[in-house]
Image 1: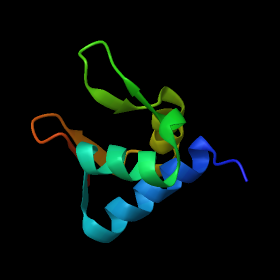
Image 2 (image 1 turned 180 degrees about the horizontal axis):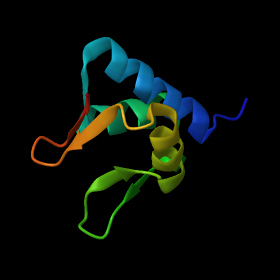
Image 3 (image 1 turned 45 degrees about the horizontal axis):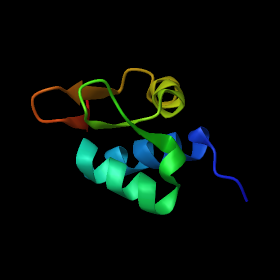
Image 4 (image 1 turned 135 degrees about the vertical axis):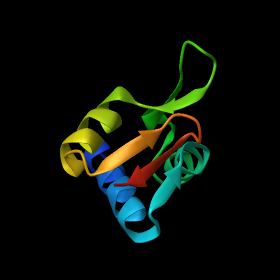
Length: 78
């Protein structure tokens, strides 16, 4: 069965709701291992990042309830 960006984004929201935070490095490792490499890419700065499709669905799902902490490289429930 093919995994979708929707499923990846739903996992992220559930994880942040449950733990309060989700570090980018942990999210990328989990997504690669459990959902597939197609949801991760290397950005222009040479860092691993989640695909634009995942981020787009993720933003729709949380509707502003989750914030990105640029200094900590993590998402947190607000």
